Amino acid sequence: MKSKIYILIGPPGAGKGTQAKNIANTKGFVLISTGDLLRENVEKKTELGQIAKSFMDKGEFVPIDLVAKIIKANIEQNLNKNGFLFDGFPRDLSQNILLDGMLKEFDLEVDKVIYIDVKDEAILERLTNRRVCPKCKKVYHMKFNKPKKDELCDDCGVALATRDDDKPEVIKNRLATYHKVTHPLVEHFEKLGKVIRIDGSKSPKEVENEIISNI
Ligand SMILES: [Zn+2]
Image 1 (spheres, rainbow, N blue to C red):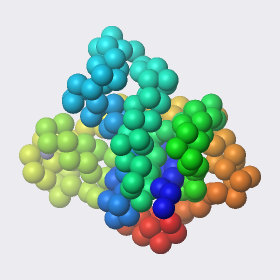
Image 2: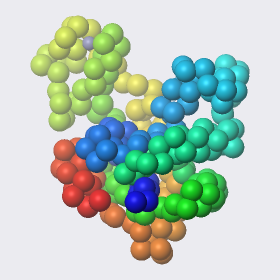
Image 3: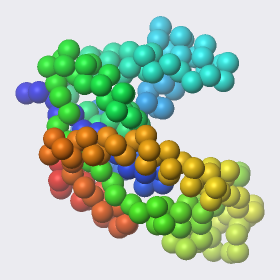
């Protein structure tokens, strides 16, 4: 049987990373998360990982062709698996062309795009209320997952901090980039009738269940 190919798309702050891990676990899919794959290849000192590291050490982005090679090697190693879940790739239409070419070589194609739909205002509320413990890295939310005492970590008693990534200006910028660069992928796959739209305003567990029951 051919492996199913799923792509997870959603705005920054939609909780994609956690969802991707849980869904892949539940469904027995191979998770292709570009960030994790790069780290893994660097740690294992694979040939491609060492080339990638030379860019990372200079503080440069790893070229997309190299990322694609690493992804392709991973597909090749896991061809007998049920399916693949992509998170973080493709990020735009040109990367989708790369992916398409790669999949064709294995006689595969994208089955469905899981689109976690969350309004910008909801993302802003979610992320600007997020706090993190600088010591143990535990994440809190000042509305939905408050620390027991003021803005202090339950475990360490240390004052919680807002990550630079969670500052409103930064989030607005990331959302604008998402709408311009990544969201066109949703429109592209909508024309092909391949989008499963998930209401991302619900709780993470509800979102996860809805995704799992739809794929
Ligand atoms: Zn802590």
